[in-house]
Length: 105
Image 1: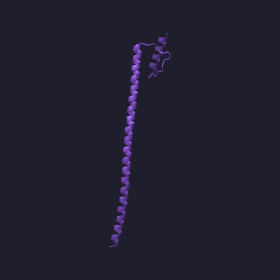
Image 2: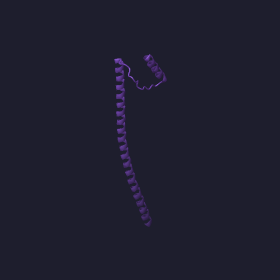
Image 3: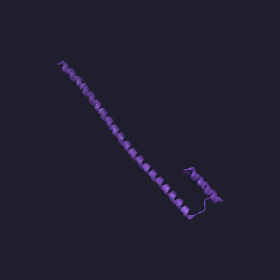
């Protein structure tokens, strides 16, 4: 009979320990779910900001294209100071320099 009581007490301690561990794991899970929710919200905000920046960039480039097309169709005189131009290849840069020299002569 005493042996049964010892086993029962041992099981009670194990059950109590497992119950406490389960509660702790449930709290950890709830915290992680909250963190995931916050991360998802932050990602959505960042995507919206990126989309807005891309749209703004697209608008700027579209406007630049319109201005260039308008300026070339008006055949207005060249400005006193040539704006800085960045070329993707050295051939484009050389061609531009030759055009400027020919226009100056």
